[in-house]
Length: 347
Image (cartoon, rainbow, N blue to C red; front, top):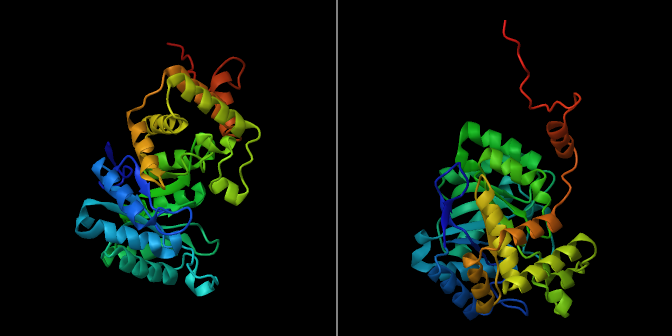
């Protein structure tokens, strides 16, 4: 497994895969304690160092299991965890959201569950619609000074809010905002409109969740299997998403690979082309799933396969991106491109 810094702002080193812990715990779709241990140890054996958690995963059980597994090797690893949601069945205003009060309370509880005295990267899980960004950054600053977190980040925030926060952090302490989390896959490329260009411009690391689009890109829903999307009633494969799955399955068949290998290989190639670090979260429920994900680290598709995948999954960037591209390529002054250097007569 390769390593990179978490963006260009800081020297925090992370593995190219991030192990998601949302399935760590008990329940019909969970790993169980022994399964979590097997997955953790195999990931570490393969060179993985970076873990993604949240205070709400498995009602806190995921963080508890992760803390047990980290043990006395804690300093060898990077732990990203998140807050915003409540683990209570009754959502109360005092225990949810992104306020300083909720942030500090959640950090204290996460530290106890993780059996550690610091969190590497803390992120609000979602914007709450009311907490000012200045309050979030101020809370990060207090926690960094107290030694309870090392860095701050943002998960699922729109690009315009993150960009404003990035500028504030650049002027005070870059550690207050080093990276973001967003959804990104062959089936969901919306982040290319604003979020990824913004992250590249500000040197933010990007953790990518749902790299297999909730199992859609594996083709399992076509085989009649159930998964996260069936539970959410969101399996609809109509239109472009169906076409994307068609091409993934076709490429997998031609290359003699699994659809998972194809989807992750495409994502790793995109990461290689990016101007900042892109790290997919893999969230296996079984050791077999993890082995398949790890197998994708050695896969490189043919250029034609990458072209087909790029083409079928391409999204419209919309205005102003398409207007600017058209102006630069075709020009607005007859046949002259806006990038043409004007001819200056020599006297």
